[in-house]
Amino acid sequence: MVEIYEKSSKRKGDVITSYEEPTDGSLRIVGTGHSFMMPGYSTLPLITRAAGLQQPAPVLHVGGGITGSSRYKWEEENGIFGFDKKPVPKLLCSIACAKWDAMMWGPYYNDRTEYYACWIDFCRKHQQDMKFYLSDAWPQLDQLNPVPKSEDELTDEVIARMHDEKRATYGPIIRELNAKYGDCVFVLPTSRAMVIAVEYYHRGELPGVQGLHKAIGGKDRSLWRDRLGHLGPGLESLEGYVFYATLYGRSPELIENEIPLPRKNGYPSEDLDRAFRKIAWEAVTSDPMSGVVDEDKNGIADDR
Image (cartoon, rainbow, N blue to C red):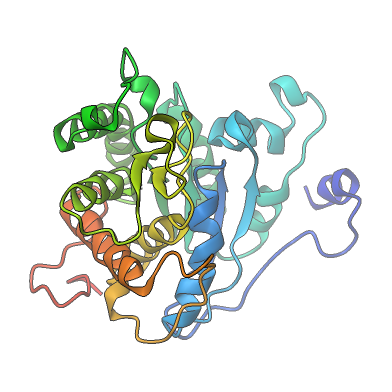
């Protein structure tokens, strides 16, 4: 695989990424994903560093739309189906030759359990004692028919119902994987976080946010920015906080150091950032599929 990837990537001698076992609790992460995962992938390193962790850079094989899905990347890495005899084993090389703690995935339409089982089987084959994390994305306008003409139609109840539809799709996949492999697969509850964010917005608790959906209301500073469902500006950190809270079992609210997150004209403000941290922890601890339980309410998972 190393020779194959050296040839396909035209790289020599550095195609395997490996890290020494961290001594501070940091996680070594590999992952696939598409544009819905990129806000979290880009902000997670900034968040973990501020939390005092020297997390090694995640090794990712990503792409836009379907090209970042778990199925597509498995086929591309193995050189099968549409990639017949043209493998690009970027992740497979490192998974086979080094130690990893977690793998992350972004979901895609018509996903099947087998698409994720392929990755788990490969990791298990190479004695990887890993945990696996699947984002459930978030509600998208095309779930509604017809698409609303006013943001007034995007009530808390409507958004919550759209979330339930998403969970009905991805929940069974996680449950089937856990039944097969043991409890090693968890949800990254980004969808639940957006449901809570909408509730905060309706209560006037998201300072600086001007609207719910730019595709409907036309406001730049909205929670969503286009019909497909990409997050609005400034929302990157919310997904990053969900990733951090799920992976490390700690509330982002406990981070005392400044996080150098991207801001434009003071947006998102510190107050909005604090709201995002609170939302992320609420989403993670209220979702039984995240694996994070905080019964004593100290901001740290009870098993950490």
